[in-house]
Image (cartoon, rainbow, N blue to C red; front, side, top):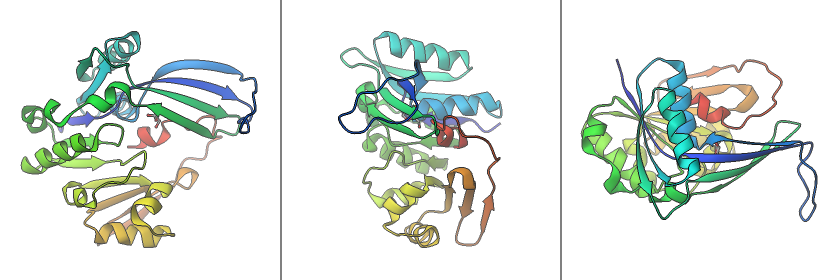
Length: 248
Ligand code: RIB
């Protein structure tokens, strides 16, 4: 069976639900606050584990604190083989999330220990044991680059979800098998203003398989030779936080 390795972030999410977002300088009452594990890497690992289609391994970094221990326990309870670097001097990564009644969200992340997952923390042996390696943009890019390089060396498939957006060296695309972006990320990485044009830019820059998530419009796949779309199920959006992570 193909084993999947997710290398990425783990956060504690502090989420406040409110009717509408406050304006700049405004104070409003929220409806409720929940605290729950998140982080794009951990979310992707958790969703993959819940699908029960493959054994999942997660590599991340946590602080020596309650949040870090809570997330580690949750990952292990989901059956994920979690290899976590413990960083005694750093807090576990966290996110402050606001969700409005219309289902929109605003997220601010504090990297904390995620920023201390370094290239030297990635063992070649773990890369060798997995078929698919999943990466995002909430750990240092030098660590992503190291994982891609090792994955390439051992002929493994890389799924890269470069979210949130940050400027990256486009040379990494040659090491990526599946690049998964949303519409905003597509425009920012390609510099284009339309989906088709943006997709062509990235394919010309070396992306082999491009996946574009389009929210309620579903998603599309494009390579040099093939293109197709998949519709989304129609639902009333209540909270879309981590919807993209679950899709990955
Ligand atoms: O994609 C949603 C995630 O982004 C949240 O869980 C938050 O922690 C941030 O990483």
